[in-house]
Every structure is written in structure tokens, then in C-alpha cells.
Length: 325
Ligand code: UT7
Image (cartoon, rainbow, N blue to C red; front, side):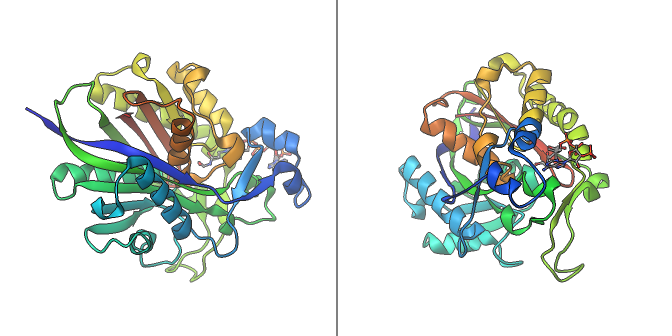
């Protein structure tokens, strides 16, 4: 008996040209390159240009993923876009991408789970592909957090950056073995009791404004490693796999100390971790697909490799996936 699986055909990314360094930030708020590097591992981040949006960056990342997958946009019948910084309150940014790609069939919608958004979008697309209702999906993470930041708040404005990443998934009938390519499991978690620890202080139904990002950084940090390792253990239990089976750990890129702490607790050696937070900062839902595209472009991640993805963020939401490339 075969199993319907969502197999990655290709991936792509887009980063704005503008690089914002720690030194430049130190000229705007009371911070230093030394503090930012030591506490977060971030050296620089990208900032979207005026006129560049979550949607326009998502379209660029999607085009790059389609080219990498060697398929035409018309072969896509599902677009799931993870973002907390949509172009408009509605419609979904995914439909702007759909229109830009010239697709008029199938379905396109957004998913909002903040930094866990890409893994939530992956789970959503995987579940829909498995129903048989869709054949090929674009799963995109795209963010312009620079437009949500309070640029006078040194505790948050140094942490985030802009960018987009995308993968193309195709439903394939496979033997149902652990060697199968594709999404092998996705585990999603949330706990709304923590909703005020990382949030935006505006919104259409509360203030009628966009608002700014607010975070109790120490509180988020305190929960991060435990939540991440817990949901990763769930993913291992669901598949019977162990940390020894992993070729690459591709974590959400919030803070190098959270990444290293999680890897250490899970027993993953540093040479199996994909790190981009030093160059991208925290790009929220875009960070995992950006990291994937980075490690695929330089041929670290190869076909058949087993990847462990994880994320944790506002909500709190947290999630993990095992994916054979
Ligand atoms: O994507 C998921 C969501 N986000 C995260 O995962 C972020 C989670 N949190 C973190 O990564 C860390 O908590 C931070 C990087 C935000 C902060 O690191 P920390 O080691 O937890 O520092 P802290 O918040 O305990 O602050 C230590 C000190 C404070 O001064 P006092 O009170 O000790 O005098 C802050 O005011 O550092 C000060 N501080 C800064 N100093 C220089 C805070 N931000 C800055 C800054 N530059 N940019």
C-alpha cells in the first residue's frame, strides 16, 4: 500500500538589498555591536525598500522556487503564505502572489502563527495535498517586520529583519517507508496564556491601527528551549526516528543562543545546524525557508537528507517537522 506524501521539488528565497548593520543601529539607539552579537549572534539584517512589500518579496521567492523546481506557475494549485505582516488587512497576501504569478485556478490563503508560521503553513499544505484535492503547493514565508518595529526600542528593533522564502511541494504516492522523501511528520502546538509576552499593540478590531511589536524578551527566551525540544521529541516519537537520523537541523532563526541551547539539549552537533541569524536577523515566518534556500544553494542540503525543522514564537506557538529532502 502506498502513502500520499508532500515532496519538496524546489526552494527559493528573496532578500532586500539594503543591509542594516549593528554599527548603524548603534548610531540610532543606545546599543552596541558587541551587545547584539553576544546576546543574539546577529551581525546584520536586511530591510525592505520603500515600495517593497511582503507580497512582492513573496512573489520573488516563489519565482525562484519554481525555477529551482523546474516547473511552471500554472502547475501550482495551492498557495499557503505564512506572514504576520500582510500587505493589507485583507485580502490575504497569498492572493496577491497568485495574481502576480498569473494563476487563476486553485486556492490561495494566508496563515498567521508568527515565527512558527512557516511550519504551520507546511502542515496546512501537507494536510490539503494528502486529501487529494490539490496536487502542487507553494508554501511561502514572507515578512516585513521592519514596518512593525518601534525603532526607538533597543530591546526589539535590533532583533528583526525582512525577507521571504518558499518551497514547492508535490503530492506523490510513495511506499510509506522511513526512506520516503517528503514531509514525514509535522507537530503543531500553541498556548494562548502567553499571548501578551510577544504581540503587536494594534489591529483592525482593537485599535484600528497597525501597531508596534512589543516583547518581554527574557520571558520568551525562558520558555523557548523547553518548548522547542518538547515538540521535537513529539516529532521523533511520531516517526520512530531519533536525533542520530538527522542530517540537518534547520531551526527558526531568532537568536543564536536559543538555537545552540536547543541543539545542545537535543544532542545535535554544531556541524549539522544551518545558521543564518547572523546575516538575516529574525525574519519570523521567513526564517526557515530562507535558511533552507541558503543551505541548498551551497549544496549542504542534498536530496535524500533528513531535515529537522522547528520554530517558536508569538502566541506562544511552536512546531516541529521532519522532512526528507
Ligand atoms: O522569534 C521568537 C521570538 N523572539 C525571540 O525568540 C527572542 C527571545 N529573547 C531573546 O532573544 C533575548 O531575551 C534578547 C536578545 C531579546 C535579550 O537578551 P537577554 O540576555 O534576555 O537580555 P535581557 O532582556 O535580560 O536584558 C539585559 C540587559 C537589560 O539591561 P539591565 O536591565 O540588565 O540593566 C536591557 O535593558 O540588556 C539591556 N538591553 C540592551 N542593551 C544594549 C536590551 N536590549 C539592548 C540592546 N543593547 N539592544
